[in-house]
Image 1 (cartoon, rainbow, N blue to C red):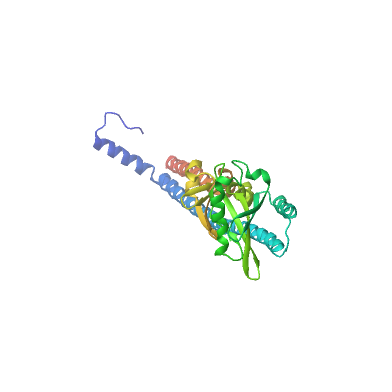
Image 2: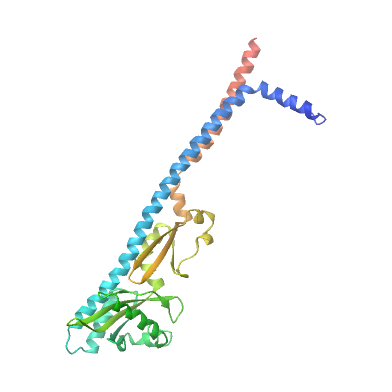
Length: 298
């Protein structure tokens, strides 16, 4: 039942037809089972994909909420310090610095705190080391911090400004809250953080769960890698969501890591496909054996 190499095209076609006719029943049985296996595999993978999309949608909503909560929590912290000191008639710099350092001790991402007057001129700041060159309160970046502090002119209850380049590279974020007396703004308190440290703290749990996360702010990539750097599977499942608090708007990009995808996928579809193909081969063999047995009896 082999084709001779010297056959013409017509002879080869007739020989193939004869073989197909002779093995029609086994081929048909194998084809039906194989097609059914492929259909079952496709249906199971489609269901898996739908479940993964659902997980990613939920993750996006969670990330947007967690990022907003992390930003708002720090706005509330600096607002609390402002409320504490705005009514003090004769503020003492040492006592104020101690309270500011206590706030920093509670939140390690805060790198410096400043008290500015109603015209945004610097009154006090802490820690002293942050004022050194390349420090988080480097005088070279003072204009950016003044611009960030001015956000209180629009957000009277305090808010967070858009980020700006830090002295050590990366980007810095300023949380600001006004200090008011008799309805007038008497000063502004600001807390400076590094965007990378801030985001690290907020998304640490999600990173441990296996999600890769990146953050963009306008044209700037503030945090994390590009999905393309982690392969085609990462690009396939890449998603994004937006968080905005005050003047700070971040686009959060996220996708499952290879390890997480392994956990989200099951072996069920592969088992169905392989098992179905093996069954197709086995059933084709059984049908052929039955045919030969009946011919022998005849």
